[in-house]
Length: 336
Image (cartoon, rainbow, N blue to C red; front, top):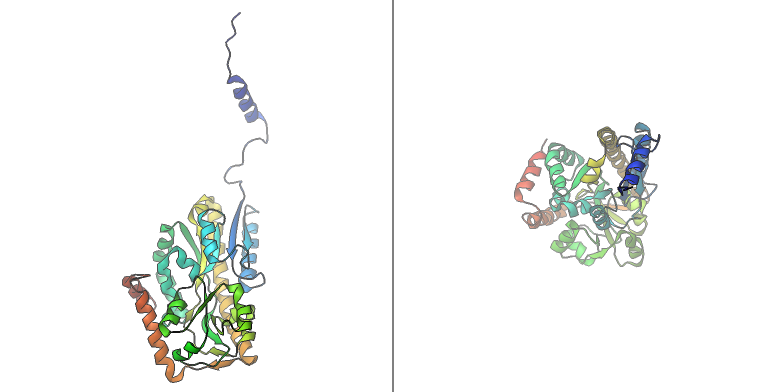
């Protein structure tokens, strides 16, 4: 008797049996759970983290646990250069960053933190509101979604020695973040000898006087205890320490439509609360350092010298980091 062998028959029977068994089907996209890995330099107890944790709780409540955030605070995933690299290779899904990190994705975004340019929240808010579609498109072209804007306060100068004019900085050793662009250029224009360091290195460098000046918001200076090592700070700010949250576009697109809708609405609310909280807390921090004896420096008749230095930085960056057409568009959008 001739038996024809059917080598695929056992596999076929197994597949049919699996279909017949209850509870063996794969979860549908609507049933899958998603965890977004987000990194930030913000410390665990900061205003940023309190609101991000609340955002995560709301996400889970509104999606019955199908969408949640796993946050890596305090630079545990490295610095912002590391965040960008890890997002690009899929080791992180999103990151909360300053414009230093965001400009590593879209270099032209540095236009938002030029010195002496968008130096009030009102100007910055108008620009980001009016030009939102253009900025979102810039990031999408690089494979990222702009989730929301979030800032870190008014950028001031803090120093251990008295200063008032740009000329005074030549006798100081100002710190610059190792990946920062604006203050590197500003100190170069002024002729100051800047010292490049990572954020964790700043406090010990202030203690040993390896550096004796930092650019920072009052909020950051208090949170990282930098203010305890200085005696003077500017009464004016050169810019806003602008930032935001970027997410890999493919990860965002992977979310089912209902989860994207919840993510969008909750993230908009979270970033609105972050900005409101940061602005209030930064002003409180300013008052704290004043009460602790930090002297507020008034530019006085040196204001024209600062304005000239700021203008030179803008001129040097135009055409190199961003086109003049973008600078003109931002200038126009900043108007009431």
